[in-house]
Length: 276
Length: 276
Image (tube, rainbow over all chains, first blue to last red; front, side, top):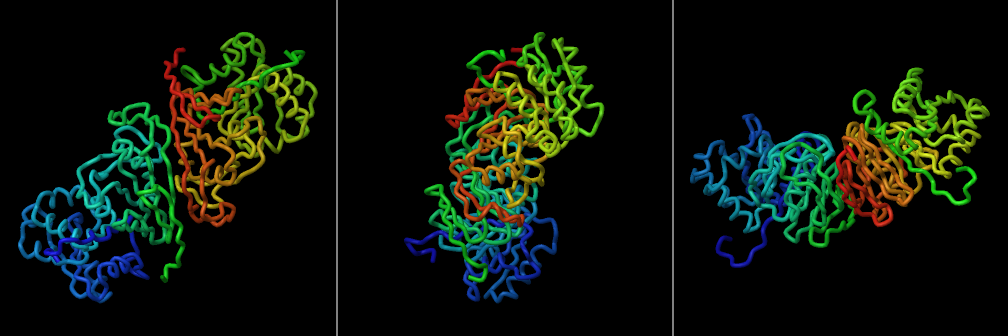
């Protein structure tokens, strides 16, 4: 496929963390189906995680679904990201899954490496990139690297760091309502008001289609935080935790089956049962 | 003033609770000044409170400021609201202060009584009505009588009850960010989308001027939740705690010195020191 002149980048799936891994496994199954189902070649990147069981847990789920190949890529240090076998597996993957953990670890390990170039290449050729929790955060650039809780936007309340930048025109936050992260996402989009904030709840995913539509799947909500028309009255950059004074942040909250168009900034309701 | 034919209703002061009562007492002092300063006749209504010390605490503060008269009106039951002396005191007050406690108690005690008519009359003649916490909630109609915490708007998450209705075109919530009440205020304005939500933090007040400008004073923030252009995709009325799916709720967050015009739905920045 690398030789094709025209191709569509793959779908991105930003999962808000704590997705069901034991019952219906709905979201992981959608990732598997989007990646090609029985024909899927899935690469699992556990770089964010400290827990050795993380990769194998996903391996067993995607294998049980019936993927053609499932590989865990043990890329935990910058050097690992130069491993030729790993790079080749990433280039040939139809689905790449970034696990949870610490998003700062993902970027530290992958940044400017052959492994990351392979992910970009695969994505541009059509591979699906899914990330849960830290893996979802790392999809955008900049990304939210950490921060504090609460619905009040305070100056300096989140660490804004370079991300992988696979998702364009948006910035992701996760465990969104469970950890009360509206404030820090508003802060992030006020600092980067050309980007739309996408706050994803646990066991929920924002499926980002190449046509810039966001489709919501799962049990919780996805909240769109649109600061593209914001007026700010104090500088967001001053890291003093004081409240940001602003006008015109627009919120949209979506559940399973609804879609939001980033192009028109509007919600498209398309309610479907989870069985579809 | 009672003999004037044309008069302007008084200022309303919605205080988010936990206002400073021991140091600068800035907000209470502003209530005192708005009420006429040394010429103020202040009536304290502790109807919301179960604590006998509530009325006397405010009495001592307003007396220390130098108000001309300060009266605690012991209206704790519906019958008390028919007491002629109390009614006369309310009619002649230049400032009426509703304490914190339970807003449902305020409306239960005052609803359709001579005391409430006296408050309305005094307000229409120009008396300032201030309320803190429960006293702030009760100013609007409907009011938020209680509810649950969190920034996610869920169906049925707040009790919406009749309020005093002194404040028009808005609905107040208090202890706003301290108790994470954005969700319930969004729910309330989605049920009543002609009203603007005004979420007031602790030790902060929304001063509602007769020209429909809201002025913020104090240490925290006031958040305006404007659902006048909201699109809803599931019914807010179903009391099942499921997330509300919506598009286009507009947020504005203000701090001390800024003003918001309810007429034009826009923020007017007028930063001033607290010493003004």
